[in-house]
Length: 121
Image (cartoon, rainbow, N blue to C red; front, side, top):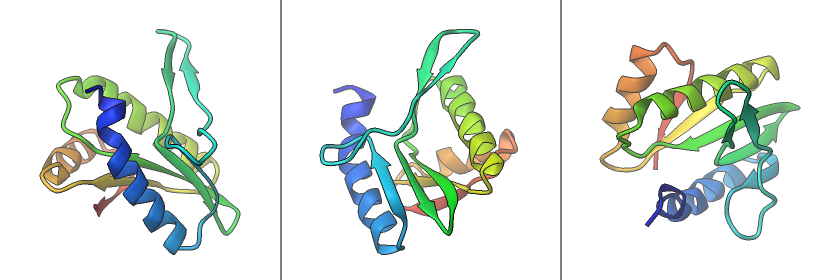
């Protein structure tokens, strides 16, 4: 199972939370929703796409599912980019942490000074 496939049930649960909180223009990497816009990192040609994007009070927010990963550098780069994009649009970056993954997410955010809010999932 790939990481993307592993994230699907968590993304579906996170989308429910986003909808309940009244966000609009929800885009998610799951069936039934338009895929969020992806970004290409020019130095590596890697494609980076958020798990979920949505708008609240005219501000674009990004939502990520935090799963433990051996490739921490890739996760950090993705979260830093999404944090930058969200702040540029006066939005926020939210990291959904499933049970057992919260400490991993918290360590990465604190060690790399990524402005993001961790939400339990």
